[in-house]
Length: 199
Image (tube, rainbow, N blue to C red):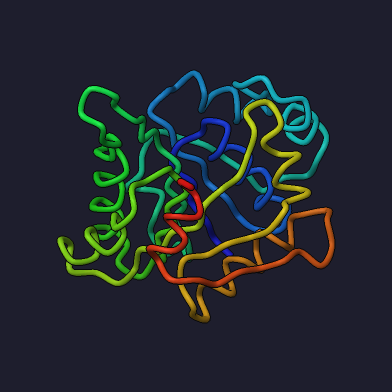
């Protein structure tokens, strides 16, 4: 599989490394410093297991700063850009997530877009309606900063907010890279998946 991961913070980078064990993965970030670090097999964030895997494992992983040239002919695009909660407005700032989704739909309509960023309940239904697409799904992550790859290697469960063949395939990709066996996989409705993440 060819996979693009947009956003190389602890969520995106840990997913990129997990998946690059068995798939061709391109990581995208607006920070040239992060991109350079990943290409030199150095972790730009503090995470012992990430540092170890980048240095020691045979990963099919490259990184750059250009989404549009990287998403042609990809199977999945994982969006893990910041969506910080604004206490003043009581809303998540999902602008970076939305702009990535719009760019991918425009340049790679064949790709399944998997949102890993934290989003409010109803976000996926709303973005599908606004952009007239069914290519966006949500898969919540339950990762600890500093232990993100470890939590991906030994997940408590894998949840995808859709009951479909592509959802099962994506869950299988996450399981393929994990060290834990017989992982519980849950396929639920979009809003249920969003609520599981938040609550």
